[in-house]
Image (cartoon, rainbow, N blue to C red; front, side):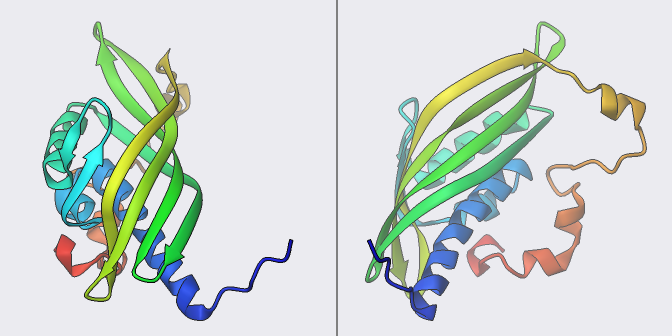
Length: 180
């Protein structure tokens, strides 16, 4: 089956849509609610099963929850995006790692799944209008950080403004005005 060659405009739309997921993940890991909220249009909704409501309220909930963890790391995987004019739908794979404390011992919680999204272009900007999270698998293990313990001078990521990426204004230029 021949696949049509996308136009430059279609590729630009696809990248703008994928940037929504990148901002969402960055906002979570850096504990930056404004960046995470910028992935959504006003009035957007979410359905995570355990949380159903507005995207704005969900981000506040998620930021408070993730702040309890010493660190998190979210990765976007393959993404299928279907664009129809000013609306689009997509399936975005993700893998998330969370360092947490349980019984005074560090644990690593991993969650993998997919986001099922609906997007819209409003006033020329793409953003999520509805996101559902489907969890495909989870795993919890005792933390194993011996390399980090043996390499104390390794540059480490940070959160809440304490990360090198948050101090580099060149990175932030790519974020939407809604996040600033």
